[in-house]
Image (cartoon, rainbow, N blue to C red; front, side):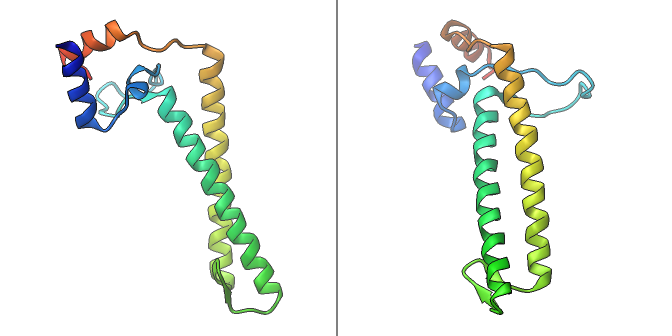
Amino acid sequence: MESILLLGIIGKSGMTMDDLRSPVIPFPPDLPTNTTAPLLTERTLKNCHLSWICRKRNLAARLEALEQANLGGLANCWAGDCSDQHIRALRDAVLEAYWVEERLREAARWCSEREMKPVSMRKLIKDAKSGYV
């Protein structure tokens, strides 16, 4: 019965079993206690880091293409308009992506150093019965 309940909860939330079993990252101590921020797990943090790595790579490739097209005297290319304003905006986006990816890498490294253990299935089922999942 518990497994059916757990599968129903997973199906509704769009989470996988690995997401639920992943260690929960504790909130920072200076965070207000009345916050309604969702739980962050190590798995979701690593997935977020991977998506920002891809974003950083894609933005850098677009910026390189725009700069090369601009040097060649082209008005546009596959990466978009070669205007100075567009290139500046893309350069800012690349810098932002580098900054965010670096912070996420530090957070993932922090999790790895703590060697947090996945949640046991028994605790997961107990929490599901109590309505915490």
